[in-house]
Image (cartoon, rainbow over the protein chains, first blue to last red):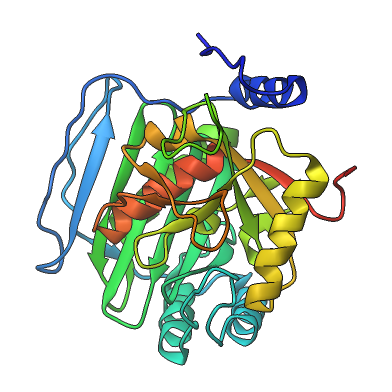
Amino acid sequence: MEPAIDFLTTDSQTYISNLYSTDRTDIEGAYSLSYLSGTGEESYFGEKDTGPNGNNKESTSILHMDKADWYDEAVSELTEILKECGSENWDGHGSLPISYGTYSKARELLKLIPQSLPKPSIVPEPENEIGFEWWIDPKTSFVISVKDDDKITFAGLLGKNREIWGVEVFEDSFPQLIYENVKRLFSQSNGY
Amino acid sequence: MDIKSDSVSEIEVLTRFIFSTSHFTRKDSRIKYAAFMPYKGKTSVFRTSNLSYREIWNIGEAVGDTSGRSLKARGDILAENVYEQDLKVEPSTSWHHLHADITGWPSERAKTKLIAMKLASKAKLILKSSDPQ
């Protein structure tokens, strides 16, 4: 139920009602969080799964595949981001510059993304990280990101009742846990 | 209730001004998660309930003038959606009486991203170029 909004003007009440009516991604129910050892000593992930098939998976084996068809296009975008975001405050809110070290890590990671996955959006983040985002709808998306260290951070909204987040060690191949979740994202949505 | 009070009501509209074209997409008409990610633990927003479109854009342009950036778009979100993520909205009025910071972000980068994704999923994108004003 919407709370009383009498103190607002009529226009504001209408606008707020419209915001309330947008699709919601509230997640209800039980909460389970697992920190599991993975391929490296600092790998971990957490999951929140209220569906019937909640699971705990080891973050283990790694895929190694040829670079994707969209690799060159993605590298061009990445290079543009380095140009646009290479000085501080590029986001107008005080952001750190995207460093060449972060750009290099992102470029390495791009090369590792299996060609069976679609091209992600490339997104600069305010604290010198670059994210790769696969987005299906407001409830279904996955982000991996890197900075100039040896970690891959990931987070995913996997439908109404599932979410996952964690860290993988950046090695010389693509983490299987991430691959499987991104692949599932698309297989759920359109039979990809 | 006073919209300028020290406590931000859950039904207030919070506006995040966007200065990077990498933080939204026209194609899907949506804001990307990174637009809500904090810098030094804070995401800067403005309390814009009861303001006209022109007044809201004027604030955004003033922010852009301060930072030397061109305003591209804005994201509007209800404070309730922020509170649902166990975040806080703290008025921070030294620069502008309607300014506030979203605080209380987790220390884990991954969890922060997940929350930013949820905020972005609730926010409404309004392009500077397409707003009727």
